[in-house]
Image (cartoon, rainbow, N blue to C red; front, side, top):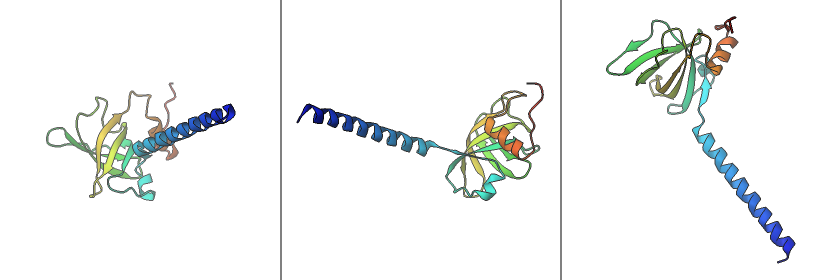
Length: 147
């Protein structure tokens, strides 16, 4: 093998290694991706039971029901549609009715969204970007003027 052939084989092997590692990285990230939906979006985008998604919107007033232990049931709404949610665990301190929330979990076969992660609004001016954009698009939420 000449010097030129050795150099070319090292370059080709390096490119093959980079290509394989990039492909594996994208495959792993694709497996962990959870898509973001608003309640009204779920009507047009059917979600299979067991598929992991993020659901964002406002905690619907009058729907928070505390069950046995740390189980809480509530509804997430975008003022057009509502989705029933159940969560077992400790809720964030800022969780309350009428506040922005992002939940992450899967739908059960009964159509209830079973959540394992709840993210609540940080303060009176902050709302998670995905929720704010979705609510603004539907004309439900307006950004405060004091920023």
